[in-house]
Image (cartoon, rainbow, N blue to C red):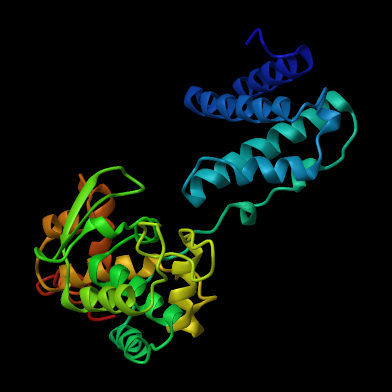
Length: 307
């Protein structure tokens, strides 16, 4: 720990000794030690010269970038930080700014539960598609079909090239933007029709080889925001719903494969995944078969009669 300034190292070492004297288990002491050094690394990166320079905003930003994914993990980190700040303020600084009250369990970031579209919402996308007339609307429809029927990410939609589409073989071949892995998918009839309608009647004549381009000069490629705008155009009331975005189409696509009893391997192939660590989360959206998972309670006696 030689690279830490004395004001930091002395405080941490004193705190760790205090923990050990308080009969904490060694594993607990080690965990707390790691958490405190992590805080010190962040504070030093902020350029402070002592604990008296800490501000509430620094603490909030530190927790906001914490790597713990679970509420329990982040809450534990908050507990460690608060206890250390209390130790510093009462035992070293001799003054209480009460920084140890800034962070609460509510500071931990919330996790939004992902959703898939209902059958009615899918039908409404097709209704929107059927009513498209303008160039932007036809472009929106083609984007939506790539997400809903092929499971494309927004990044892959906007990066799609004209040469990626094999009309004779009815397939699309891309290098996925996120993973850089190749992906070849059959071109569904509805997705193919939407692409053809857009390319043949609405796409501006331009040198750009991206399928989806701006409809005003200089006709550059689009950003993923265009995919989000297309989604909002078809389902405007879902625009501000937590966990809902263009990516919801990809989740709906994957869930549809599972609900058709195709299996996890088919989902992995269609999404371009090389392992099931990501694809397995889609199992929870297969409501019908998830209901078959609970074990029967028949044969389990309850002492004293029924509850």
